Length: 380
Ligand code: ADP
Image (cartoon, rainbow, N blue to C red; front, side, top):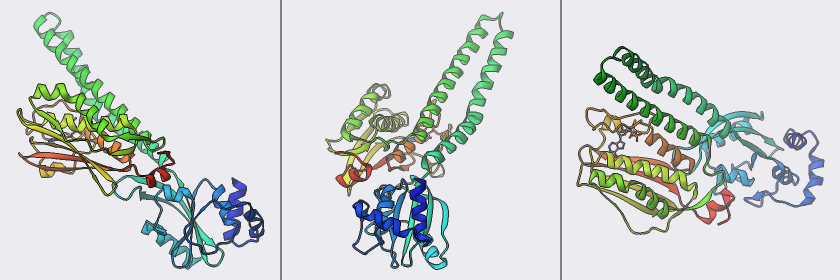
């Protein structure tokens, strides 16, 4: 790989290694050709051999060659670079003649707020062209972020119940001669330990989600199945709350991803909807297919979310004003988990809500199309 890289940079630094690459050109051409404009022959083979995504851009900023990785990362569409930031770097390199190396956060899909973290190198390729190489550093960035978050979460959220357990244990000792007091403290001790267990469980789940990528080994997932499973998991709770949990007819929609993760996300939305619904109201789950996007919506007729809280509900550990909602015993991690699942599937989650009227949470996911299958490297 080092040799190939050296060869490649040899090409665009114009140091004469070009001839060697020309010789390699005769062994066939595999990099995707976007137009037929001639590019120095050997470049194809080198691009093929590189692990990085590679794009060759001509003087009019048209992409004339792009490796499959460049399409998978969503860097190229309709023969041009998708992200203006990348076009700006290409222009700068063309203007100054100096190679540029930069770390960039770019959006991952056509919509949603999932990011790619790329290490990008751009340099001139001969007199006419510019070569862009991009390496995916999302995984290592995600691990770093996870480590940071985990420490912050532990210190903020576990401190209170751990402190309470300590105090209650002391209280138990001093009340050892009063059986009623002992019972009362023991009860509270059990409640605090259950809370600790729930928070720990959800932090682990969230960390696992942040560390993994549903699309690294994507499977074809039937959304109607996901809805049916999530509804099944909430039947008992719906009866307990006396809420009518309904879903519409079959959609036939499919996505690439991880079924268990998607069921967990929808389960969280439905159980929230039930928690915040008054008895004898209705919670509906619907699936809509629109322009290669699948929308799964959970609608309730519950308390709604005040305007000043709506932007914060997806934050880790955010809980609404307890004065307004009944004590749900929630950890404030549910919607954070939903957000990560949606992002891991190159999608997003949105909320519409009106106080006193109810809320609709919508997960949007790219539909499994044959074009997407190609970029994900999946057999349909
Ligand atoms: P939890 O439910 O464990 O408290 P979540 O992350 O699931 O944590 O939700 C965060 C907050 O968002 C909740 O405490 C609540 O204030 C608000 N919320 C979530 N879903 C709804 C809903 N369907 N209706 C009203 N408020 C909601």
